[in-house]
Image 1: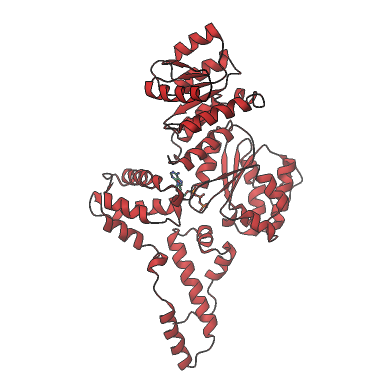
Image 2: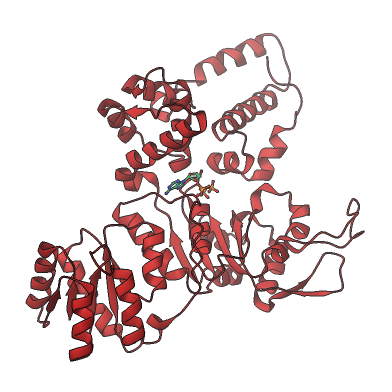
Length: 467
Ligand SMILES: Nc1ncnc2c1ncn2[C@@H]1O[C@H](COP(=O)(O)OP(=O)(O)OP(=O)(O)O)[C@@H](O)[C@H]1O
């Protein structure tokens, strides 16, 4: 087993741990020394390499190794665990990616795993794909173990044309994950098309997905290609898949199985090559159990599942994310970047982020726009958090004013008290949720735990609201 790293201490501890585990280990300070040894002695069973080194870096070494010893499994080690580096390593043919700093037991276990898997996975490390990274696409920030694990999975999965189901609470970054999967895939140069199933009225969803011919229904004056056609050769991202009406689920299943369909009102069979990535914040197994989601569609979409952790589970990412959002906001406002003071950071870390990264992002925009000084203190964070719906701990007892209102109504001999109170109750909740999500209905519905249709229906004026 070979270890290539210019950092002597990393080399030493890794080599020692591997030797302790019973492997024979040779150490190399630079890529060319390893390549010379390869020419002289032939390939080892496994090679670990760092990425950043003087001379050839680890990815160049990987490239040369793949040309000279294609069967040699390579583990790439790097402190740069963003999606692009991880995916770059996998694209180059790395068998595994090890984030630095790593746990030695983890490294030894990984060596054992790679060697054990080696026969079965021999072909995998030789998979080729086109490069094609979009450099300024939004970056997935995260350095916590949960996010590194996710990046690693994205890097690996991006190469395979499998369907992926991305799960996670609202605002965790599911769409960004889908975009990263596309960006790092051989389809990167083709379109990425997103459709939020919950945001489109059920009756329009079919034609949105599959397109329609002119005259297919009232108002269809021109032929319209659907999202499947638009995504041909690329990736179709179906967000909030749990909200898709059952009849459309049946149709989608058939299209996914056959790869072909008719536009609404059409006779021409359309054939497409689309990779589908679906996302949901809902428990789809529970929806299957309730009969609201087709089990066979779930199986087809859920070939691989990626769970995006909530922000609560990765509080070490809160500050780096906030700093990034503050920097973006400053650039947008052409203003100096605002800085978080330690008390502000403490307050951010105490919050439990029910709206996840989106909530943090919105908060940072408010701080960038409203905080008076360049250094953001605890009070500003408190105010910015407070200007949202008050979290549960600050909930006032609203039953008291309600009781007063009901008593007054009864005394006045008013009718429909219950219906009017309910209408007001609904509207208040919906309005607050809409404010919270900046007017995004699907999200507001999701946060409240109601269907999007329920939300739309309840927003229509029903009777008179109580005064
Ligand atoms: N890891 C991250 N790094 C940087 N920005 C992020 C990250 N995760 C999420 N964001 C940002 O947070 C916002 C919400 O992300 P996104 O829309 O991907 O979430 P989602 O899980 O798809 O939400 P929903 O379930 O409501 O559709 C976006 O503006 C996105 O750019």
